[in-house]
Length: 313
Picture (cartoon, rainbow, N blue to C red):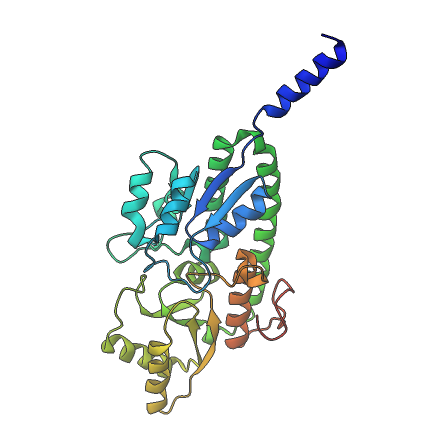
């Protein structure tokens, strides 16, 4: 065999070798999936089961979801009972592939009390905690896909820099809210970590899960608080019915105190994919900007990141 022929045979043999296959990564919520998509930068296939407007407390896996999980090399979920309706199925898959609850990496002292069964699962409301949780996902990806480890480390470092910068800007913006107005009243108790991180009182109609019922007595107590503290704005959420929030407004009006809806917040889900609020940073920017403007603080309409659509996003 001539040298040229041997080279052709070797080239054909090398071409026949399988290329490095991208890892199939499934995440339950976009707060995990979107940052990982940015960090992996096409080196892994990221599939998120729940889209915008979907309530993870109530979400049940579909046949399509189960097929996606079956094909996954690694699965990331929030944990702390957030995805309550799919825990049994995730446990079954954990017997044969990595299934990681990233909130489980946080120590007990960092987690807020829950409803008696678990801790508060809404840890993405504090960027510092969310960075820690996302780092556990990046570390797992590096373990299971070492060939792309350098890319993941570099992109994660850049992403977390942006996350810390947003956190700093949020802190400065929230500091402009008058002290007497630092009360965040929402449909369900998803903003506890946000309140702790930025020193804002958080008052919610429902508990940590949207499965919990809002009793008449709880609404009456919150109306008393609205009237006594002269709170003028309450907030609805994109994944929760506005019915209970409107009951608060009506109750306050009956006692001659005017309360308005200060805006719609992203709590358990982010905005539509492809838009700024469909990113974790954009979702957080929207929430901070909406809250600060409604409670009398100072922040540009285009947001603390300067990328929100004028007036709304």
